[in-house]
Length: 156
Image (cartoon, rainbow, N blue to C red; front, side, top):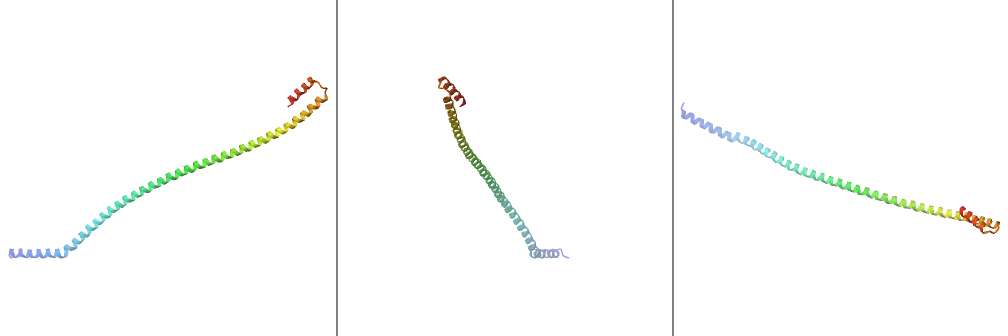
């Protein structure tokens, strides 16, 4: 065999093999590699979008927590104001009730004083009549009258 013919046959077989590989083997391999690269790129893109969405969700969660804290503080403040209002209302009611009770007690005391005065007047009138009777029963004597008047004073 001739070395040149062998070399030419090998060149021809090599080019046929190269053409066959480039025509039938290479396109599916490249397509598989391109699909794999596209999937990897899509995965990385989705991961970036996921990170961004996570950051946005975290910010939103922080905003919600802040809003909830503020709302809680507001409700606590409102409750404290309401408690103070209730306390003030109770104080006012108690003060009004105390004033009413005091007025009733004063009125009752005044009635009792009036009643005591009336009773005292009646007793004084009775004593005056008794004193006058005793003065009239005795003889008219200045010393005796003074004595009787002193007794009358001590009885009053």
